[in-house]
Image (cartoon, rainbow, N blue to C red; front, side):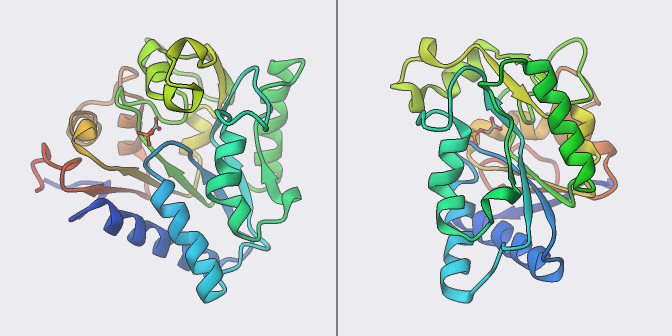
Length: 249
Ligand code: PGA
């Protein structure tokens, strides 16, 4: 079978993180002004740790890079430990040299959330679009916060989170899914798919089923990640448990 998606399978999570960090590092070295789209979640934590190490030990510099995060919760600010802005400060920005003015975030506290989404799309376009978009995948197949639905939205928009997604994010809200905001702002499907290169990363057996559907299944709005199959330059980095249901193993 011919896969348009490039699939890379590693023995364990740490190898996934090293390979992904190496790819990002070489992209940044080749193109210091690179525009990076960045994810949050448990999966990329080890990759960010590796990038901080490369910065500290090998002088990898992000001084000219530009970043756009995929999504943010509505109604909490950057000082809230559950916010993605806070996560990024802890795991990445606090340990590398991206200048603050080059870091872009959706503001979930904006008075007018629709205008905020339009602003974000405009800022991405003005930066020339993403050169490299890194993605996680939700257990339900979401990318960013584009949740499975009858219809998907192309551009950055306001999202009502599914109960399962709120449960998955409960850890940074005192373990209580009820305290996880009901809404978020997210890049849309086209915002993501317009990136010149995409890398989706998934680890652990809990992701095996959605990874299998993403790669072998039909394109469906019920599994937003399946649209990666249409991208000309997309790669999927997996550990063995996440790849365990793939026919390519
Ligand atoms: P996770 O989240 O890395 O915490 O599993 C992935 C996602 O929801 O995109």
